[in-house]
Image 1: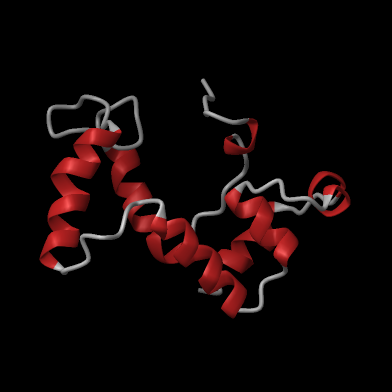
Image 2: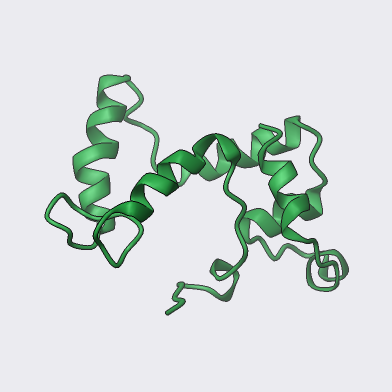
Length: 119
């Protein structure tokens, strides 16, 4: 099943090669979802936020940052790496105002993968 709060949330998202081992580990677990709790239940946002994100950010003295801030960081790093704005929009699911580029330009996964691996 594919679910998202917006249509833009259902898209092809490249996974940077440097984090593929995490996905391989998660996929080997005995769970129907990508990431599960130790007892095999679906890992929900509150589990992640309360148990992992908040303590980590507190330990790093970065409590003012939210998980959404990572999108800003990713976009900034892709921009600094010189990745074309159309590719960035497709990776992060932004529709933007340039309909021609966003709706009528279709970029293949290898191009998006090269882009995400550039950071």
